[in-house]
Image (cartoon, rainbow over all chains, first blue to last red; front, side, top):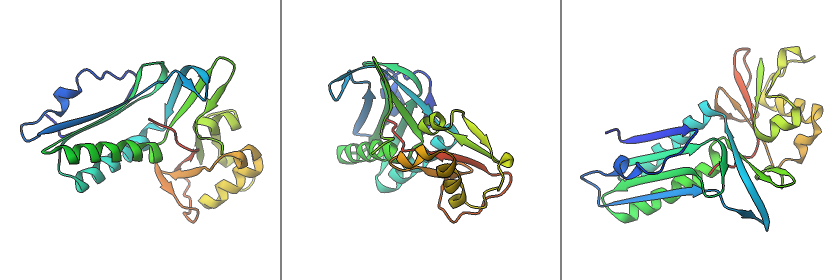
Length: 139
Length: 80
């Protein structure tokens, strides 16, 4: 099975990720799943809408995975982000790594989600009952 | 020369791309693009920041543009 999976998808299915990450040389797997929360600053969220500049987003995601593979000894990596309309409790992003030991798993997983949020051209619009807000757009 | 717009940039301009060859002075550099946008659409000044990508890579202000470059406005990202 391939060593890294980097994808942007309409529907994110988290069920198969263990199979994608398991590896005979791995002693641990870390998976982070970002999901839609019901309230932002005491306002009820109806849904989130994600859009992307896909060609660039995939390149930036690849850079993050490449950096992580240099920094830590990883056996398998999954980085998959959803786009489109997502409702409360739905998954929107999944980051998974497998490695010989847990320290590398935790550190790499953390690094990859934190960096994705900083550099990958994906935008999230929060839809409330009476308004919509592009997250982080304004100071 | 086409400018792609995403997220709030698309909302500010009201469409998902601008044909820069229709503008009076064709922008020479990434810095020119930023000047053009903030002049034509002052709401760009209200954003936390915005970046420009040339051929799907983040580009610094000094990058010189070519006719067939794919240029995109990258407002503050918010994935995850």
